[in-house]
Image 1 (cartoon, rainbow, N blue to C red):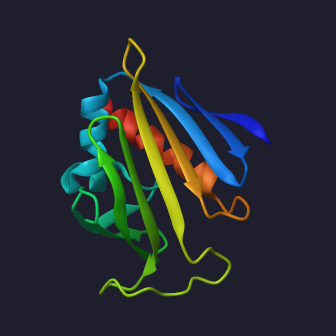
Image 2 (tube, rainbow, N blue to C red):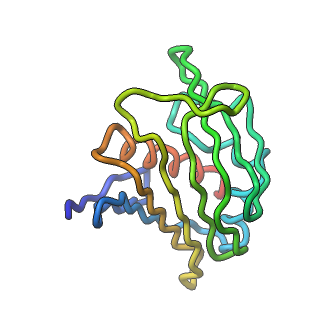
Amino acid sequence: MATGTASGGAARTSVEWEQGELVIARHFGAPPARVFELWTRAEHFAAWFGPEGTTLPHCTLDARPGGILHFCHHHANGEDVWVRGVYDEVAAPDRLAFTCWFSDPEGRRVERPGFPAEMRIAATFVDDGGGTLLTIRQAGLVTDQGEVAGWTETLDRLDRLVA
């Protein structure tokens, strides 16, 4: 298991690989209900989700078990990467999980060479007495293809929104 810490301003993001899963943990200075809400409402999610330089010009979330998420990462270089998924678990304000895959703008699955066909992301939101300890587990990765840096930058953006 490789372990490391990536800094994001004053915040710290811990990164580990456990049994084929990327595990990222970070503290946020807001209660779990607030951080959970930022993950489950499209207008909030679109404001922070994705690494620096990306936007989400299309974002649809139906945060309930069986509900769909569908969004477009628009990168600074002009590339659009579409993702669709389904929520497996939504237990406000403690936990959510979804399975996702690359898609086209209509939501149909597409292959993205070199990347897994499907990934599962689970997030837990734990009250740590001074805010929220968010832990993300991403399964389906074979190796780090930029996910560590991407998640770190994404969580930096979330931290700025929470502040």
